[in-house]
Image (tube, rainbow, N blue to C red; front, side, top):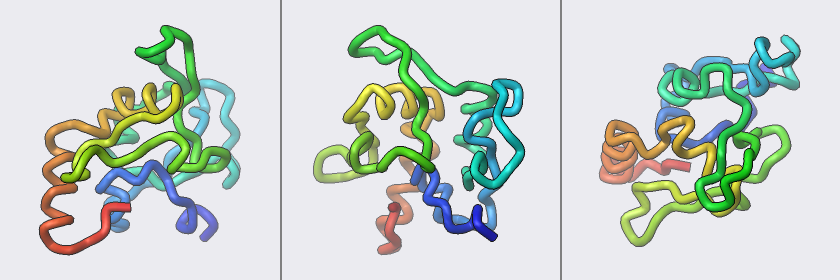
Length: 125
């Protein structure tokens, strides 16, 4: 299945493939197609917060920016792990800065999941 090979938003939930769901990158309510090119794996947490959004307001510039699209964006250009502990995501671009809060990728539950995965020696990327 093509969708299974897509690297989505890389929150810790993506590692738990049995909990991943297929999500529309561009929601159908925003004109997104129902074909494989518009699908990505997402954890229920991120997908629930993305809902029907395609963009957000960059807190740095105050301008609208698109949410991260795993089909066209490279993760390393938009995100990095914070400091030495690497539990928090930081936005490197307007896209990264709007995606993190919109999907609540640094929600305490997600941060704790990443901590536990690291404690177990499992990669979070």
